[in-house]
Length: 160
Image (cartoon, rainbow, N blue to C red; front, side):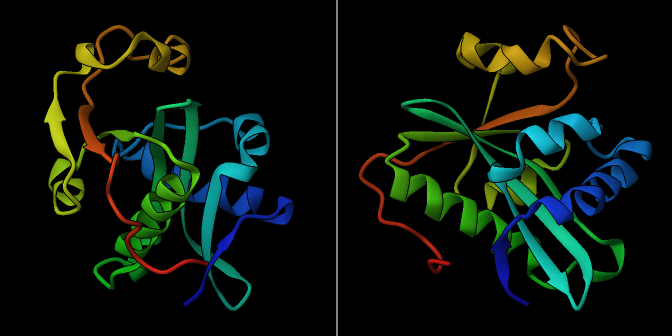
């Protein structure tokens, strides 16, 4: 399976995939308008015409980016697809010169295998809270915050 940058036609599939997991309380929901607004952030994996996985790298500032909306179709989990998407996000962040990445997740052990380390969510810079203020769970976030420093780190994974 090939990792590609998302296209406008992928938005309904991305939205459906993310909100499938959100309905089960496994990740936060994303409105359709937000997926359209951030389509350039997304990487996708397709199997034929089906979108089977997605992840987004969202730049917040010159030194900080977030990996978000990582979702892999239930039938295709445990096949390294999520790993490949994280590697693509980390690689692009390093190529862009981002100093550190963070994520908010319910599955910290998955991200820890890439070197992410847990931090108290309140220790993240205030600039990450813009999106959080629109969340139904704010200010009582129950996701776990993790950070990965990238400064002086070579790119990982393959370039697209």
